Length: 608
Ligand code: ADP
Image 1 (cartoon, rainbow, N blue to C red):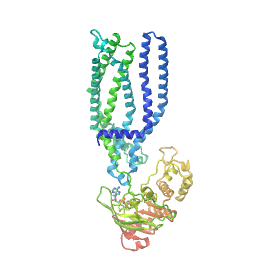
Image 2 (cartoon, rainbow, N blue to C red):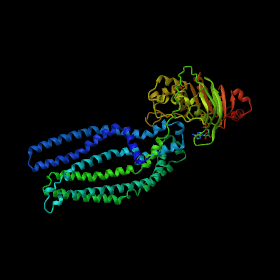
Image 3 (cartoon, rainbow, N blue to C red):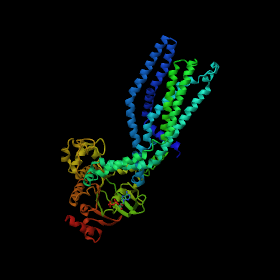
Image 4 (cartoon, helix red, strand yellow):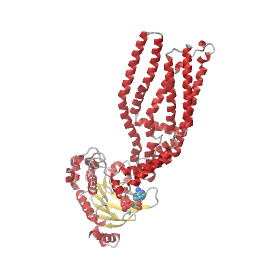
């Protein structure tokens, strides 16, 4: 995509993210920037009136000036808080857009090293790359102000062009010719050129070191997150990593400073040139304006308007150029950004609605299912065929890495099979609408996440929740009494990040909250994917069995690498290197020679 197309797309996206902000910002900037120009105009007219001793006109001009001034000042002041508020909202929207995109993406795209790296680069680029949407937005208020001031300045300079050559006489006649003004235009263009060249050089320098700054920043932010994370605090203290991490941070500061050291020197010659041209133009302009007034070509009061307008143009135009040059100098940032934003979204294959059934008659079947993770040739699941009856309890057991979690992820359609199919009520699961399909599953993953929200919100995974239902689920997992001792019961925050009365749960309590969450969702298919891996085998068995008593009539899958935990299940599927190598009840399997028998006896010493 061409850079100009990218910039237009970026501006459109920014406009979409903050229409009200940009409109209010324009109005507010227009009012606040116009105040000084208003005073140039009126002071000039008042001085003219004074020189003609037109007292009435002076009073009328003063009244006009003060009224317009009051209106502009009032509007500008009233809008200021609104603008700041909308700015905050727009900044957040722009910052969040890539994260929203990540959530819209099909899970297998999102869980891909390349995608994750792209998102990380955008995240860090957001704060350091000039043409990221986020930083472009930061520059917009300045750019708007410079544009408005420059345009006002140019408008107020127009009397300079009103030359009547017929009135020019004598040796100073040239003072009143358009040619002399063209020299000024040339001077302004030269100043713009040197400012642009200087800024481009600085921007190019930034582009050259950008990659290295980005990498250092990425590491810096990563370690910063670790340093501020209370969970990591244990390891940091225990392994005495604090000093090393702090030193790393200082070293990274130094290396960024080193990289940026020469930035201020780059293009400095051009910037000095801009200042010199600007000053020369300033002096020459004052001389010209003075001469024209002295010779009677301009009224005396115009000195104020013209000289002030000129100094505004000379101050604001180079700044405008500098900001634009910085933004335009790094189109690579936008290329990267839109490459990410244009990745395919959620799969749109399925459109079939899922029938709502109170009898939970959702029957799953797997036929010749094989799967390799995207970007890998290694088959993690090979030719799996199985059928799951409604209301039965299934165990998926096998050693670590045998493909148990991957199988569950496929069953839930977080990934698509490489070959084979999964059917729901005899229809290919891919034909169903994905969001409705997800509604069929309540899962507690091994690496479940509780959020920095209240206990009730964590259970419902939503801002609003049914307190009675949340309490019932806590009761079912044996956490109701504990939750009643919390300072604000269900409204107590988990973690102390946002509320110093928040509660830090133990590992076991957190697991129970995660199970409450699954029960609250009350989906027809329940899955426990080793959320209890950190517990001892006996405790895991008890939790699995207790959970099973709660979910009575639902289809349930229990995953564990410990055979004892799932021995109560109707059917046990033994996974080994991505294949189902045995099926049957515990009583059946423990009698047969095979993997289950071997593992059972190998593990038995831990719980017999
Ligand atoms: P289990 O649940 O039985 O411990 P998994 O299903 O988690 O096993 O993993 C099976 C295999 O797939 C392992 O070799 C693991 O390294 C690999 N694997 C798991 N997740 C991913 C992933 N996101 N990308 C690539 N390979 C993965």
